[in-house]
Length: 553
Image (cartoon, rainbow, N blue to C red):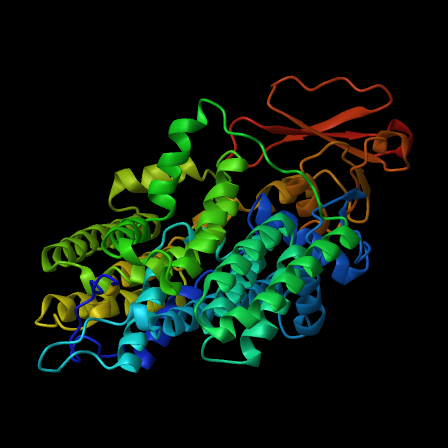
């Protein structure tokens, strides 16, 4: 005899989160960071540089490169960004066009997380325990409440915050993994949508640079389908197997099979658990509680389905020595599992989450406002001095729209805190309102009030501007073995033609760039040192500019 379900939910507890409020919260999470900034250094800038090169015709769409050096083999996300640039560039600049396309991917991941949780909560094993005299939650209302909670849990997860707002292939992988979750979850209730979703999700995941992940979750999903008691789910098994084979074949054709595993070293044994603690917060404590309280139901769909991607994401993170981008794919499944903790959560635990969230995010918001005041007025003096020290050369400027958006977000947060501290104890999703709202608030404040100094520090524009003082427009720059983010900055922000191949010094370029952490410029035969520059916020690395003597100047 099956153990009784641990969920006890009244009809009042299954009240839905108002749709307008949920959409407003998602908008507050998605839109900040889209406007008014450059692509940031490292992965964001590298991916955008390849997309821009494809859109401008400077590199092949089948083998994207930066400065003649082959780049990431995740073709489909780069095609998406390049296509968005081509379609939208007459209306907006290229970085915004690419970011808009990837913001839609994040919105799709949120929507699919909602749909996944909704269908899983409709299954018999996930439903709350019936009351002796009635009054328990209706199945559809309960499923709506669980789905709303899963979206709040995903928004609240700290690991999604930065990586979810970049133009990198991992965001496309996130959307594909969530689409596969939806396919497994909706199979008992839909006929063609899950089949088409499964058939598309795994090949798209492989084409987005994660073929091994596609094969692993495909095989695990096949086993989940095989064990299911639903005939429709068992029928989905053939589609999942076919999609897994198609993903492997596509990866073979695109040449994306690369062994990226790097077993963790002894130093990673503590670093990886610390990463898990903050990256998956606050979903992981709730998910662990779910697994404990629903431990007799681990083989049922509402837990087995999300565990497919959670297990694969955690394993990939370990195999890649703590890669946070591999861990990103576990977050939607983790949010789904966390949502099922709420029907079993004790009132004291719910209150602890609320009070911690209220004090932590209110304190963070106050800190951001103090930094903004110091940046604009010089008061308080110590934060102003710290900003000037961390971002030397930065000149603050006032933006009325940014201030208005930050003020509106802060007032919304105060209203939300007042609402939550009132007598609103029934709603199932109530414990995740403040964590999700607090993350959205801090992201909004950071991307409005602190965006100028943050963009100044994380963009390569200031370095490109200093290089431009010594390099003429239209010059060809040889940058052998240069970091891909520097090459992307030179091509995108400086509009120079760059040769980053190992033999670039033997080419026709008149300018040579070398970077290093030493203070003494290396002597290079056949080249004359012209200048040394560095990023204003970088105290270690320096870039030396050389010119061929025969080239003049």
